[in-house]
Image 1 (tube, rainbow, N blue to C red):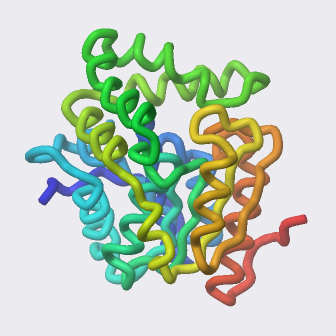
Image 2 (tube, one colour; image 1 turned 60 degrees about the vertical axis):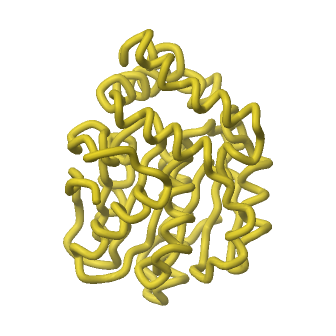
Length: 265
């Protein structure tokens, strides 16, 4: 079992919304959601085990281990959660929904995929990332990888924020465990078993997982809505937070049957 994780919390009322960040990020990636959605939900954004302010796990974690750590965090609130996962966080959220279905009230999966093991070349590249981080160090590693996570026309202040967030978040051995979990993940055979209603979103300019991977997720899930977020790259929740948050609120309105947010047009 992993040590308890650090989490940032905002909001006093409404459903619990747990936010799981991507493989090169932290709870800081959800600043727009913590600020805007906390008027409608209790928003919790974690630092995954071995990331940012969370302690290193006691040993290597596989995808089940990350899902179990998320389940432990949800249980600490004594209720189920709507789970928002971005990229690697989306893969964790999907495994959480199959491994602990009673804890997942609904899913919001953003710019994600069924996992890197769907393609041997992608899996190999994912496994190589730990050595790259060890060679370059967090700052240079983030400077190399960060700009590709947003669209080519993203404002420079967002690019800088993404780079700084990554540099502050990633370290070994946690990043190596995360990369190995992603490299071994292929969720295609279990997606049909997920019963939680899902919203799948993807930036139209996502250059990392891409629109096709999100379409594959949406097509395999039974109860799903699929949304393209215009003018956004891989981090659609940060690049177009107004549109992204409106869709999340609309989803929560529908699945909780308690309208609170603006309608999406």
